[in-house]
Length: 450
Ligand code: ADP
Ligand code: MG
Image (cartoon, rainbow, N blue to C red; front, side, top):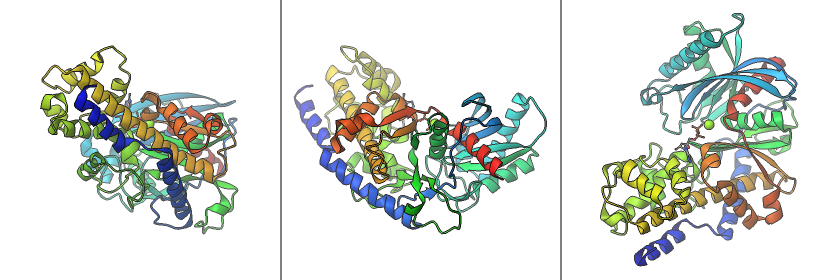
């Protein structure tokens, strides 16, 4: 990079780099917040009991439906469990329009019920028997039974009216009744819990499930005696806890907020909420990169002061572009140049040093996300005494799957926090779209229990 680009690089490195000491502070704070969440309602990290206690054996058989809402698409899936840990799957995706995301809850539920009805008529092979459905609903829910839970607040661009404080299963079940579709919502499942259970079916050692996609969150098995807020009679050895970790650091106590993060937050539909999620998940990483680029243009330090209508607009820098730029190994960063000039419509020929600078920005922001993710994982594995016990962690999401070197960078952070042996001993298993399968498994377990 050229002269003033070198100065920028130093400045940006200072903004976005997290040293081992900082990582440790974050882990410590995270463990404190976990304890608070397990102790009382209303804590920042909600630590919601999922009512899921058992583990599947892999021998179960039967057909179960799963519904997945909260990612980019609505998905309806049917799993046929064949025993011996095997299954067949049929799936359809449906686009949830922005109007539905921000309209009334009953309209959203009607739409979902219609999609399920359509799926059943398309794929149905047997009787009109009422089907059991596991509903993956990836928003913070105050769960009150395996098939009951009220929405606490929306995240990830949803904001339907008449939903917060209401039972999500009742709302959806009502829609199935209205449309006369023979489906029983047997389980309400957070996608993290589903991701955990899906992998537990294949590998019983799995103790944690993580989403690193549009948003971020995690679930893990916690011992009965540590869930000090549990006031019901039901006893169990351990229960899956839906952490809602995206809310971590609501107090702004420890995360490394930059001006770019603050700008993103202010302009988001949920200012101040989900600060951890806003630093590590797919919905936001590209936007942080965009904020840095636009700011450097304004300071006359990048792209010869030339922006574009596309680049000036919020959310136009998809996190997939961050992956594409990081993957660009051409000599003169030709792919990065094309992306800037063709897709982001920057109306000049970008220089090599501009492209290098933008690649560097992408590196810093994705590496920060990986290191912050590792802090949260470390806090969970440490507080459950598993970190030295070859833990198996199930992960789903494009950020983990596609951002180049993300897993390596998580391990580097674990090595900074513990040592190389620990960093190597953690197994990350990609459970692509596993939450639906997990939800079907939980519906099956709940139905059998009845
Ligand atoms: P979801 O969370 O909706 O189930 P994903 O796990 O695919 O789905 O995550 C979607 C998020 O990941 C979006 O925010 C998108 O911008 C981002 N994304 C999509 N493709 C990539 C990619 N190749 N690299 C990094 N991020 C990506
Ligand atoms: Mg997903």
